[in-house]
Length: 291
Image (cartoon, one colour):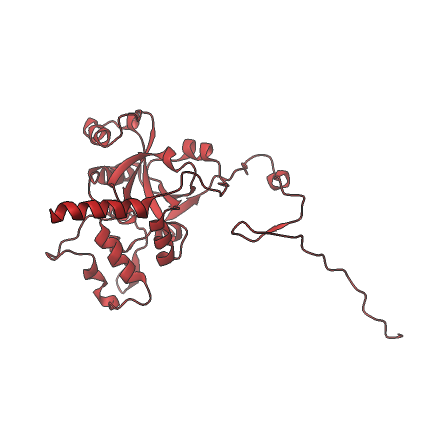
């Protein structure tokens, strides 16, 4: 009875935390149609969420990127039948085989596969691993596919918050033990830690720790994947930032001269506030020495 009550309360809390408005008043300044045709398997999507849990993550990480997902391509692009069956078993029945798919960790659902289109109305940034071998991209995707169905690790989210917040009571040297169970084994992860684990499985760096080494000059250490947040893929020097602005800069230049700039002269101050045109300073001649 207690377990049933706990699950019921937990479900209500998760629903409250993950609820997002269907539409945003914010106009998305990127071309989603270009993005969906040019995105590649293995790309990491960073998403600016609007839910309550997203606002919490934003406050903790001081970054607009509150969610991460791994783009895996379309089901018809997979040659391995076993992999296709695993993905299909976690897809909704109305999703077609040529739908562009992502793998993500969601608080109230665990590790799931979703259509890329669910984030059409969100601010998105693509982080593309630089120079990764095609064979390793397949291994990264396979790693993520095998994680489908795992529960979302709420304890890791809480541990990460305690680790990152400046007023944390836990010493930094305890960081390596924060994300482990009483048996000492790591649990399932959250969205960014799963992706970090997938890339670490092929020794691709995200934000490794580097130190001087007498023999090789430098020695790299893989970072604990449970310490990763979405913004780490944004700042990593091993991922290229791919943007698809609303107006294609590849068209004949200068493209920026054709942008629909307002003629009102108003300035946008964020949070939906417009201010009047800035007054131009008039040039005044300095008084002559004869006056």
